[in-house]
Length: 260
Image (cartoon, rainbow, N blue to C red; front, side):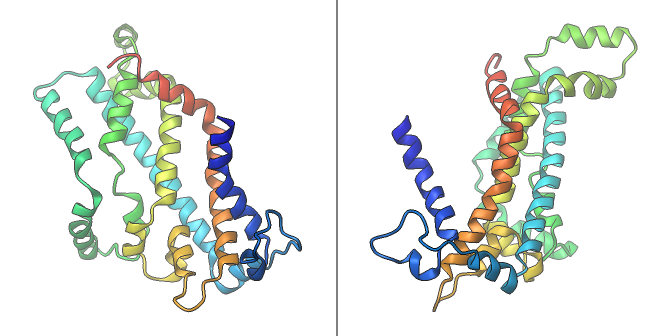
């Protein structure tokens, strides 16, 4: 496991080290593990030549807004499938799960046409709204909420609680670990999303981090020092989010496996 951990972390350590190297030292042979003359020129040029701070902010708030909406709607949908029986519920769940087999590339062009007609091209709404209630999240929360005893809900109904109050005051607090793990998954997916923002966003100040890093590449000269600096900065929010929610992540991943 130590060997595997070293292999997995080596590219990240190289990225961080190269972000403090000059462009010439990055291509030096034999390569240097640690920079001989550490410099922050790559970071300085990155913020001086590009609106990278704005790009970081764009990724942060679009990923956060998408995560909040997706976790709420997926928890609501999972609650409905787990605790209520209605005509056609099994068929509807099967259709919902079947949608997971449809690649995003199939729906990308129709989605672009719809967003063009409603004026969401070069807008962050197109990054926040799609996938706000997706099949994976609903199924994930359904498996977790299904482990909550029905007797708790029955006791709450006897005390006069409405269904929405049961959801907000009982289900949400119990399902908090699963919601935490789902938040990490959604946040990482939204932050690392590249293809759809590349198609949707046009102005440099509207770009997210992934698209901004791609725009740094040039057919003639690629500034690898700036790319390494930008890549290092782009991983920090993911590390912080995981460190804050790792306890809920582990608990949420294992909770849904109790009952299918």
